Image (spheres, one colour):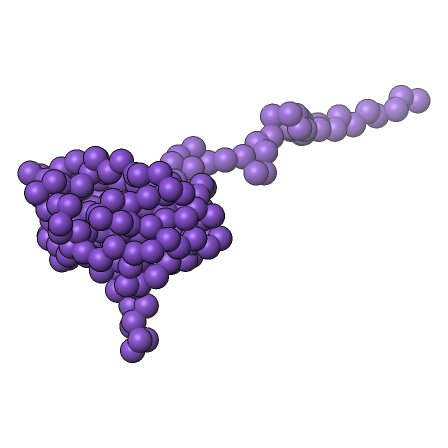
Length: 221
């Protein structure tokens, strides 16, 4: 007895995909990074970007200038004739505000100092340091003596300060600790320690070290 054989045709199934051939889920899309990176630049025109760059530069410059002006450097304009002929009215000087934070005042320094007024106001004066703490200073016949020795003062103008015209002499006085004795180079025309008394080092703004204006008066001090 023969058995009937029925042919069954089977549709071929597609091969399973190779997992290595699948595209990663998080694969970056070409050009996406460039679009994201360029987005802020597209928000500002070239002119606006240049403006903000300049604002940043000016802001930093102002900050540095304020920092320097507050802690390191100042400038003062000379008023009056108390320092003629070293300084003249209208001269502008740079003042090193760090000098006396780093070292003590030296004899001969030209200094800017605060003078406190009775009304509660204050103004800045510019004078020369003559006497230092612990020294005995006096002036007799227009000659300054430090601990009994005559002081050589080459910065005085012989046509301004003469043996008969130097303002008031003064008797020996000992300079106190943390104080200096200051005089103007124009001795007959200066209000200084002879009238103001000894100056506390705390009232010294700093050391004037150069005349920068006008150009005709430029000099190191």
